[in-house]
Image (cartoon, rainbow, N blue to C red):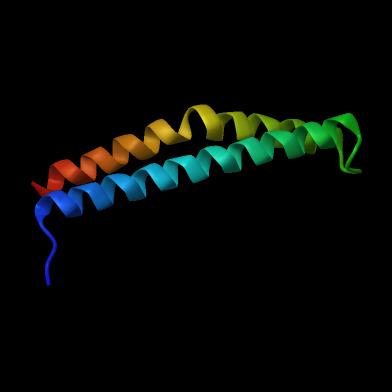
Amino acid sequence: MSRSEREQAEARARNGFIVITAVRFGGVAMVLLGFAIVRGVIDLPYAAGAVLAVMGFFEIFFLPRFIARAWKAGDDKRQ
């Protein structure tokens, strides 16, 4: 049994939302881990914690936009 176009579009949107949310949660985890390293809770070099925190911020604020833009470009090609 095949699904309607609307059901397929809803499933695609739901999957995109899940992916973007997972990326944001991963970014939050990276920031927290980076802060723990910088504060000395985890015994790793300060620079590693700073780099990890900056990468986490990038992942929270910018990566979801890139993913959404790529996802939308994929939708445009399908039509």
